[in-house]
Every structure is written in structure tokens, then in C-alpha cells.
Length: 171
Image: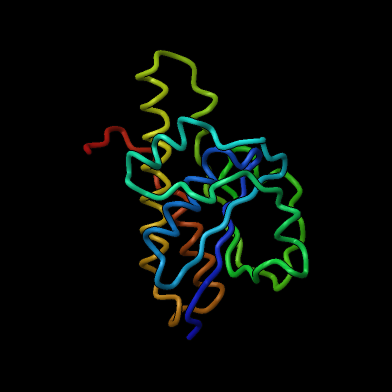
């Protein structure tokens, strides 16, 4: 059984959802998983509301910064075991070929940065996105990876990607 798995969360701007995914996985799965994030068109900095949500959850924010997916396609990059696209439009986008052929999955997660409204409504959108990612990552971490074959893992990941958006969240 492999002892550590590398997981890449891939978005477009790598400033919100993928950054949240990286942070959550590195906290919850730290004993067996290392999370990374990247984007096809990374922004210059992490969205302030995403950082605020990560801090509210008491997760570290050091070293969180947008990165291009090209960094993970290099020979010197960490070997990737899983790549999750998390944007609503990602299934139709071209993605690079990853060295080592990691298992890939798509988790469609609404972009909270596109929400317009009151500060409370925007904060709620970021909380909802964080909660969706936290639930999916928790389910992913429960998979018995050592006893599943690659096809079964792909099917389980696809099912995790179908987890619905929360209607209410209690904190």
C-alpha cells in the first residue's frame, strides 16, 4: 500500500475553490495525503474572502498562493496520484497530460467569487463552497484506497462529485 498520495485541485484562477481544497486536504488528510492546487489562468493572489473562510475554519494560510498548472506538468513536479477539476466549466476544457497518469475526477463546485449581493450573501457563498469541498474531501478520505482497484476508485470519486450543495450549514 502506498503511504502518501499527492492530490491536485485544479481550477481556472486558482484563487478560491482549488486553494480551499488544498488547505482542507492538507489539514484533514495530512497523515496520508498532500494537497496542491493550480489554475489554467492563475490570478496574482488568493481571493481575500477565501483566505478569510480558511482562517475561520482555523486552517493555516501560509504558502497558499495561485500557481499555474504548468508547474505540475514538469518532470520535476511531485508525482500526482489524483487530479480533481472543481470548476463548473472544467469538463469541457483542455487539460494537460499529467506524468504518471493520475486518477482524475471532476467535482463541479459553484464559484463563490462570482456571487453578487450583500456582504452576508457573499460570505454565505464562500461558506457554502468551503462546506461542499470539506464534505467531498472527507468522503474521499474515507475511501479504502488500498483495497480498491483503479476503476472502482474512479467510480467512487465520480459519486463523491455528485454530492449536492448544502441548503443550510450549522457552525
